[in-house]
Length: 154
Image (cartoon, rainbow, N blue to C red):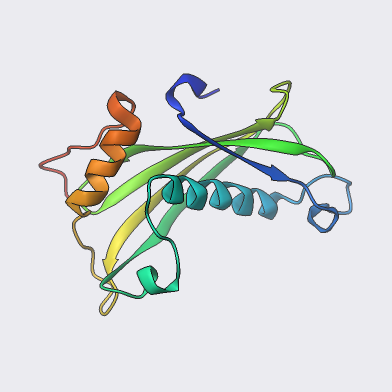
């Protein structure tokens, strides 16, 4: 399990009836939405507007990799804590990590890593991660995130 001491942000999701599959547990695709909810709320917590105007301005951020480890099935009616952090910021990319567990902390549900790339909105070519974003991550994460990678090309 990832070290929860490194996570400074937590949000919650409540499992709804339509997210349950025929086995009576949360469908695997719903976990992507839960972790996305955590990422968006994390960015808003940093003061970053996440809306159609910011997405279609001069740049955009896209997911290039999503990895989920399913540990224990979540069930209808449960409320889950979704812990979110940025683990690293490179030249044009950055990675979120997430942990999901029951509110009481009695059961680990899933863990994730997602890599995002900053792109020019006109030609989809990679752009350097803005310094303002780096500063916000550094302020929020402190030593828990690797923010300065001066010679990376990823």
